Length: 170
Length: 262
Image (cartoon, rainbow over all chains, first blue to last red; front, side, top):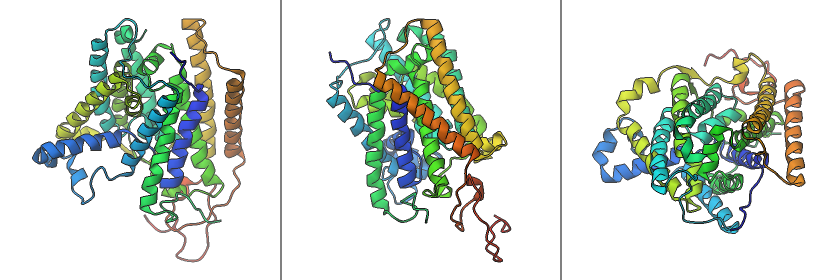
């Protein structure tokens, strides 16, 4: 297998930062991923169970205006994100249908933990009003106290839990 | 010079153009996440064992780049920062959210952005993570009344580090740049102590580029902290506290927004 094309951390970080600066300059707003994903699943639930979704005090606001919840800057941004990753993976020949896992865990074990971790993050991203991109990176750049507190807490939560899932990674 | 950015809010581009520009902006992030190796959940998971220090270092570099870009473009009079959206802080909810987020990150190996990027490269564990994310989101939204009170508690408004440290914006930027460099070096040291010869090898070109970038960031922050000397164009709606250098206050009666309440 080819060695995947990699940038060293500072250089990759600067690229991510430039994407943020572009969003500030063009749109006057921050980047974000979880907002789009929440709108996506809220829309899916609305299509299936419109009554339930309209009753939800949290999701209802997406459907109150004439504008479709996915007709949003975040949706276009997410499309670009997926395309950028896809194109880079194809060029560096690292596109592959697979389950990435450590040496000491089975594929199904890894998938189960991915599902569980995703559940935590789906909930936490709503409670914190953003995820790594929208809350931590953008807020961090904007010098917001909340964003830096969020990041410190991410690493507290992560380091505190790391021991219990160590077989998954190392 | 007029403040020309944010382009969508100064009317230089239409809303439709603004949406289309979001695609290349996202594209750049997708490329960067793939080049950083963040489309591999193992890399993110291992960050929590000091086994891989790239995750915090990439995050620091991204934040510092965004920070210097945002405030620097404002300082030179290019970007009207009072037109940029700042998320208000609800401190307890964001902290509890952060702890749950960290737990989810070490269990799941992704965050929403990296999961999306990883799915685009065919990784099935990222797809499962996304399914979990959807379930968690629905749980929050559909059972919202249970946590609504907490979600809205401890509101602090837009509170920034320069208020917190009681310093200037430039001073806060310099402090954060120094902390970022310091913590990055400490993490590298920790990695070396725990895992021995795990130091990643990169080419001389990459190494020198990285050190140059870090040096430039430090230099820029020093200039912002000690020598900010640019005048800003006054604007009616702008909030002075967002500017590194206070804009000139005009003496005509009625135009002084400092007197105007709210």
